[in-house]
Length: 310
Ligand code: A3D
Image 1 (cartoon, protein in one colour):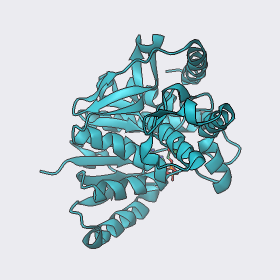
Image 2 (cartoon, helix red, strand yellow):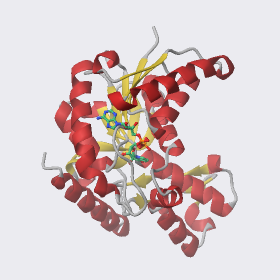
Image 3 (cartoon, helix red, strand yellow):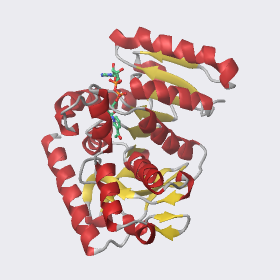
Image 4 (tube, helix red, strand yellow):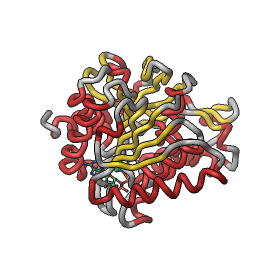
């Protein structure tokens, strides 16, 4: 029997998620959206079914507004909520998206209590916290997708700057999904060569700043709405690692209970994603400077979470 993937939210990211999940034959796909938008989502689902003969995949793709239809889902990816417009911070979305995430969490808790859940809605670190609180799911069952995208952006910008294949750039970005996230140049390599040896300090500073502002750079270009291709791929990489037990080590927002000196917050840290879900958090010994940056992002996430009043 095929696995079942529920996509809560069938907007910009949701539709790319559906396409990628189908192309990768991760399972049957159910898109859930609000009644007013469900016909559009049914159209997207049908369009994807009609793409299958050339896309070369077998999957059932459907859309609904009824949580009953996600019953028994193996994976739930949540993009329901409002995206940013130019001039907005992610935190500006808090009040509207907290209500949506609470409703979604209740639906998922009732109909897909065993699903591995990947939250994408912003402000990410607070929304994954709310989702976890409302469902009461164990911590291995819930992650936020942000570090996987932030790391992809970091790697892409390095490859663009140095004129090398992105496949050879390895590194990680820690912390919350905001302008004080922590890319780690010290631990980034290009084909095994330390970034710090092949890029100048000025280049590295430029790359760090561009990564921190990458989401905003795209929002400014769009005017309305935010990135969707790269966020969708990043969530699919996490889902695929879970479904196929690939055991990828991916930076995700995970519930820290003592790791990195953080207690009770979801924040971006390197995670082992296996068939068990978020199986393990890897800790990195940070330098004094990195630690100071990490404490700054923890403070930002703590502030946003405290505004959720949950
Ligand atoms: P958009 O295209 O507006 O899609 C959101 C969808 O959610 C729409 O189709 C809505 O109808 C639907 N929706 C709204 N309320 C509900 C509800 N109660 N139940 C079910 N569906 C609902 O946005 P998008 O796909 O571009 O972005 C989705 C979210 O992802 C936003 O909050 C973005 O800010 C966020 N985002 C996060 C990242 C990260 O890296 C974490 C990156 C990019 C976007």
